[in-house]
Length: 435
Image 1: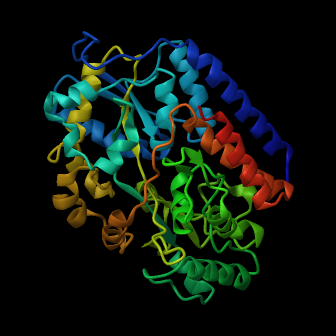
Image 2: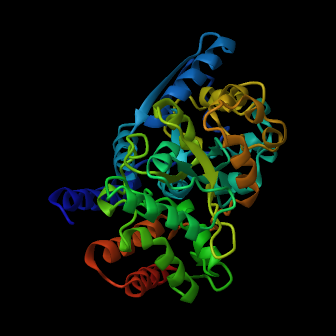
Image 3: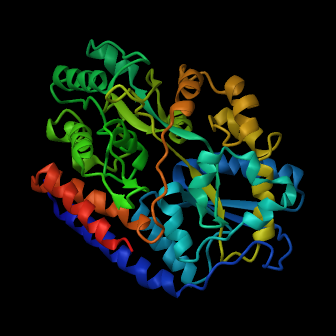
């Protein structure tokens, strides 16, 4: 159902896009690391996703213990991408951006193209403060490379996982799935919970959501022999024969109504409020659920799709603002945060999966992770090697990919358009933008 609230939200999103094109372009450009000429200031401001604020406040306190005189403040930023971009636009124009910006893989190129991020590659190349690019897992660091620049460092080697509400499975007499399951198994369990609860509980929070989280659908495209963008032909191909099969599979919880409806696509509270029995999310969200869940729950690897890995990967990162007057101080915090005996040691009990080679092989996360969910370590060990990360898309078009896919999804779910027509139109639109 299209409500007035939904229409207003979409209008607001379009307004933000317009602001991004006009407002950010007015911002002055970023610089290369080493050209700021500043000394490390003692006051550092970090803008962080609201769900991660409690964690980063703890990290800030640990940093202050070994860095006397420093004061690190962590403030929440909007969760929704349009709202967050709007805030960055406003702060960028007024030069009030945080020193360290919460960033993530599919947003990086947009922020970098509009001169909000600082290039830290020269510092990494020289091993400034002991931090080197070679220490990071390439697949995850590559998400923050744009041309010859590096504009962020991944916080965690995150993969897609499925949260399982054990109490609801038991209540409705549905067997708890096993780690070797398939997407068909996941959908069957979701349908069973939906039916046995009489629709009071959603069997699953529809994984594709509003279409903005690439890790939830990218592996399925690959499993069906498609992709978002083909670097060989230099064309978008997600509406080819395999792609259309993939979208049909991905949209089943919406089209067959055994998952949450589109009106709840951005609701992040359904699992802990006992309204859905399964949810697809990133490992980055596990710590937040630990603090909220009271019923029994667990986590499983993403199911296989068409006989292939269905596990997506991605990350959020710490980036230094091009507007910061304290880039040195911000970089000192980051150098501490990524050190094995510094921030990584502090963060690993929260379930942070170190994005560094040393952290994966010898990280404390394997022995110090909390007891809940019980299958966390086992699931991560199984998931990280199978994670499928998106390939590179041309910089000038990349920011427009997710909006185009979201529009296609809305055309199918809200307007009843065919999957073939909606996604072919999105593919044609993006290919027309390629130079």
